[in-house]
Length: 175
Length: 175
DNA sequence: CTTATCATGTAAGCCGTTACATGATTCA
DNA sequence: TGAATCATGTAACGGCTTACATGATAAG
Image (cartoon, rainbow over all chains, first blue to last red; front, side, top):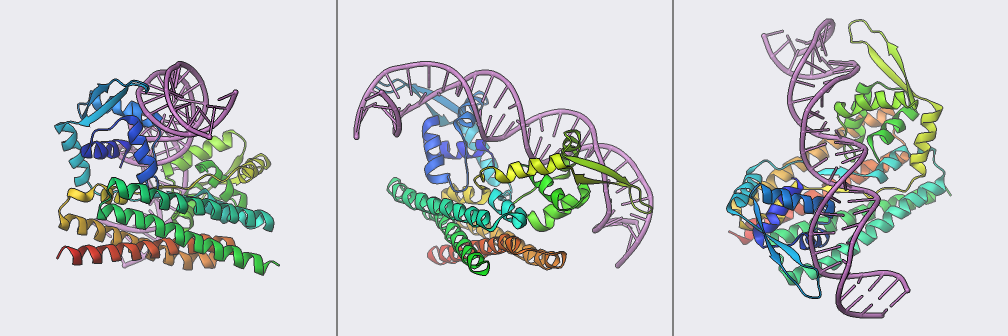
């Protein structure tokens, strides 16, 4: 799964601007995907050149003009090719876990801080996901999308549980 | 966290060959990191050129000769710089969740298959992690490393729970 | 007789990140 | 007066993946 597949998938549903695509990334896909403007805009141009999407220029007053992109039939075919391909393995990289792995020689206080910071991050992630859910529901969320949401929530909750237990144990055993 | 930090971290503990580094990647870091030979060997040469590690050639009979790398004091400094830097956010990308997100128009049977395949994958991941734990314990695993292991186990267990529930619900509601 | 283990490497290329650049409007 | 929102782009660079290339020994 590359940026291309995601953008084509979003445009397969409705026409969007680069800016709106970024908003969807942030609000609905943030937990399992991530893409910057520096990726989106060049990609839109490339997909247009390849004939998978087409642009419509919309002039606005009091707001910058925008390029609204929609998918072509070639683009739909391309997206279906992606859906027909094998599901790629998930990618997970954790700098935090790596530091725990190497943490043996760190001072207890540093380790406590490391874990506490990760707990804070995960609390924020959980909050954000919960808040986005509300917004998302009003925009229309189908039952499969709800699974992706539940998956994310469960992950953060479990991670928090493990980290809090670790911190507690770590604190008591080194008193 | 880049390949460089991980390699330096491993060599900070003991001298290793590229092949052995790869083995550690597979057995102990697999859940939260991933690196190929195509990354390891060029990196080792680069780190050597930069003076962070040094090579010792070991001639073997009945086995290919090997290059054993050890960390230098400059390398140790470099690694401590990494440890002193801010922890980077975790990276998670899931093609599976993306397909669920887009799955609305797929046939029920395709969706069931998609979820079932992901369950199988996660079952294998959980198995593998459990098996590696045994091997790892004999090699010596510290209490912080045990947290990374628990974290991984918990993730897979929770993921499986969510997916099994989703599959069950999906199957009954579309009977 | 073929697969697994041990062992090291190169080369092309892609996909994306980061940083920079611009600029109007609205709201506090 | 500053930040947030809306809106689009470029350019450099970088880290890593994939594929290719080689080859001996041991074990089943």
